[in-house]
Image (cartoon, rainbow, N blue to C red; front, side, top):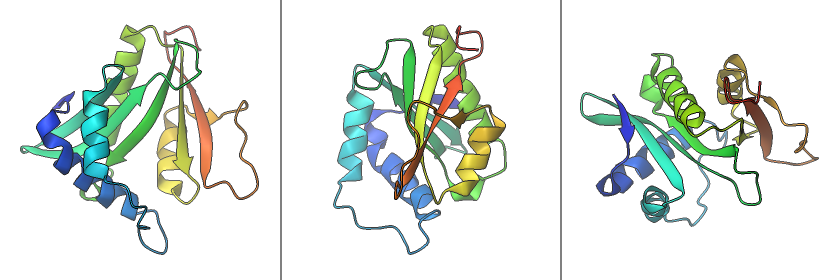
Length: 160
């Protein structure tokens, strides 16, 4: 089932986020000093954003957070977080969640989606490429960048 995250689920979302992020840091997840439970609580409460989750057997197994990026056109959506619990990789949950995001973007008349993916997260880069995401020509990677910027033409949204 895919649905909107509830405010009371912020700790569970932060735990899933932590498990997923830990998978692509070769030297272990850095201590960034961020209170991720509070950050997720704020993301869920944002009136201008959406946080979706995939639930299996009563447990959150994937999540996506998106909204219009600062200084972007209103038909552009930024996918700020997209994580699948490593125990659920390659079982279709990521694809189902991505499809739900695209359907919402279409309903909102979005034409373009953008995201940044960690340079060491090659698994996620392959996932996005298989769904039509491409390097963003307006935000090319620079020397020493930790993220790659990708762009997606929302099907049926005029961005094809």
